[in-house]
Image (cartoon, rainbow over all chains, first blue to last red; front, side):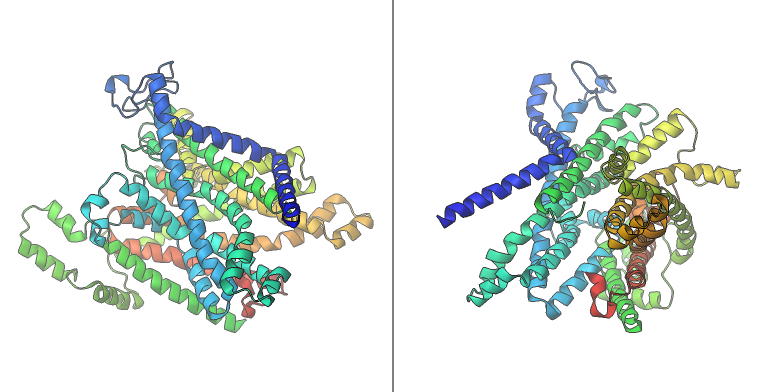
Length: 306
Length: 323
């Protein structure tokens, strides 16, 4: 009986969250847009079949085609279909951002939760460290890190030069710096939860530290972490696109929205239309994640001021 | 307060020291050292020459020893020579620093001049058409890729319309004030669009919070006009926390403009760091990166001091400045 009523309460809480989320119109639109973009990315191979083109095939006779039935968005400087390239680029840009954001969230929780829970000297050291990482000049450091020669670090050549190495490297590097926001947030949240009645009651009933942390603290820091992580996805997409644009992130021929713009600067006199689409895709993806995060914040944390 | 300052300065020095070691190590891990480049440029070099050159520049020594040598020289104010420019690295940094400061001051002033009235107006009538518009612009500003915005600005205003130059600091042979201003328009525009959104959202939130307080209701009940209420009572309180945000942003501006400076060939610190990393100019990259870190650290300290100045209830010695 009690379990059932608990389930009902949980169900109605979810319903309330959903209805609060629905009221945030931009977040709803953003969610739909992101779903569409994800579908396009997943459907990239199908799109190739449908249009009868090969996204990777270079055909110099077909350079700089304007939009047509065969190429809905035209072709690039190597005669590749722009729409198909954008879809494949979406696979890379979206998966890099989601995986890096997830890693950052896990790392941040691993630092922030113990810091807030155990406090004292331990907390001091961890937070000093976090402050130090936050004060680093992010973009220049990322550029240095991306340029590091993996073979000098002792990574075997066949791994360091495999086509996916650039992908893993950029995820790793972004997660290395991305955890600080979540760490601070989780720490602050844990500090507040620690003194709440239900946690003290758990202690009083003889629950050990692990039970308190995993059963009582962790589930309660999940929703702020989700909000912060959603908001960070947009930033990560921006970072990845900047690095790829500079030629230091995802390496061609693998497409990412950032590296599709690398040549656009040289071509802006002859083919300015090439600069439009990849940038628009980045822009709409990032703004959608930001609106989505905003909507989730309203839905998950109604106390927050808006 | 004094104790707090000493503590923070000490902590910042430690961060700076650790940073210098990390950057030093990382730069050593980048492909190609200066000797490799000499070999590439001069095929006549024998392996004995290479060994000789490496020992001449100390590159055959272990990294700790090299770092120790660099550090003791740096503490004496000698940051070494720039490989590309063949001049002391500090001497190269200074003019770039000035260029970045000029660009950033204008961007900062312009952003605040737009963000404050916009944020106040949005907070005065929440959920109005204007509020939605300001919100949309804010979100767009933080979501647009800066390099793409720069690219579009160049395509529209330089390539198509021909109104402003696509890059550089001044036209060779001209260099008057008007000419320099024209070169500044596009980078300032791109950077301002990028920064104004965050400030607007901050002011709006801060104003809404202030407008809910009792003293505002009292003032309104006493028949104060809306304009006077907004500016004299609400804004004066709401604007104070902005000091902290501006101070925090101050430091990051020195490296944050890397993309815009590179796109518009603006000879600032960001472009300097980028070019020196690409050009294997170790000493210059080190100085630039360390300087950018220093600026961020100073910005953080100023922000913490601003906290207490804004709200005397906060006790920094108790570590509240970190919360």
